[in-house]
Length: 350
Image (cartoon, rainbow, N blue to C red):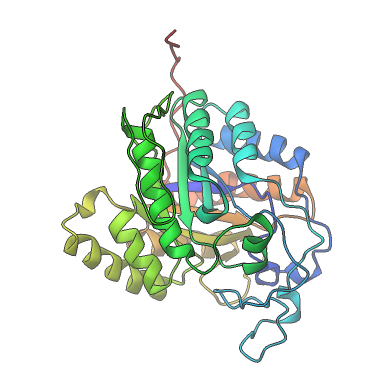
């Protein structure tokens, strides 16, 4: 099993109340100090991937309910979340692709993942160019988690197509792969076309950059099986993950694809405590309980477990969680833990 660690560039999906004491987190440690210090510690420990998220801005309230049932301040009866899950529009959000470049310069060992990049927010040529550039500069360490997004007000703010976001996502993913791999790219779609006679250089080192599809809706599962190099499951319980994994595998095989080359990632909240936390499948509690849950996810078929500590209240508190993983969890899962390899010397071609 591989392990990823979250470097929070925004608050976690509005769901701070899931952490023990989370509803009392008034200050989030999201900013340069955390990016620098937490990244360095996670790299030293040997996590396989450092993950960041993607939003651009939050409204004070949203007209649509969150897909994971967090309260979006809609005021509607079908918006069931608790007070602690409301949109926190006063919190900072650091742009994902810019930050990915910073993390690339700060690391040499870990892969760098965006989970989840909202594909329709950005022009596909520019997005492909930024990802290819980071991939070259980092020696081929980029992983993209792709999704359609949900926050209508953010789509409106950047001029993106909310109504057709699923179809746009499919076309943009295909367009990026074409740009990354074709010497003479030809792209003719409903939502994006490339003028003829264009060249895209340099190509990324990875051919192509891996794209894993995030989400748990039936459409997301179908998209993962059809277009993804893997599936990123958002905060799935063991039963949910096992059930949806079976659906995705059946779809992958039905599409004539090789399931052995398909990666399954699950995002879990992570908090090592001196006492056990609430009875959920989040990896929250004493070391023995967290290790037991990690083993259960491994047995359920998780290839890569993305650990997401609470994004506060301080940088030190997040570093403490990384330390507790290394010092208290790794000894209990020694047969599952193999740190990321140290980097090899890179040769640059003129």
